[in-house]
Length: 128
Image (cartoon, rainbow, N blue to C red; front, side, top):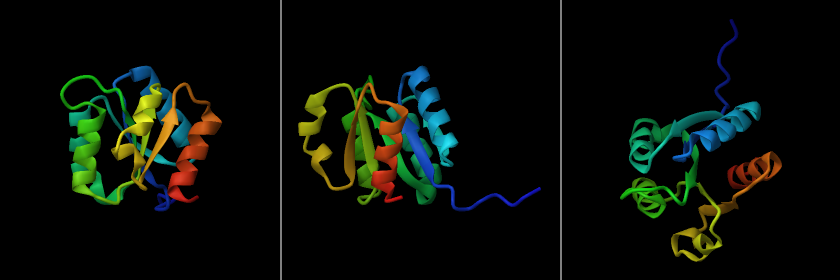
């Protein structure tokens, strides 16, 4: 039994659509990342609290429903760790003009995206 490779970076995926979570999860794992999956902003913030030191990146659905939507979740995450790297996944171009989306640590990935676009975004943000 080989030792677990410590180098795998952990990515928190917060998206309310199970299909999208599943696709992103599969793609990230194929490229050697570890994933944590959350179906709501609240669940995402909770998982972040549990794993904060290990999380290299958050993929956040900007259009999360409910009171802990994308912006509230992003506020919460950045409040916990100001230098946190976040990729906002959105079909709405207007998210790109949000004041949070213009922070250095926040990138935008527009839906629909290809596996190549997802990996390019992740690698760009993580500097890999």
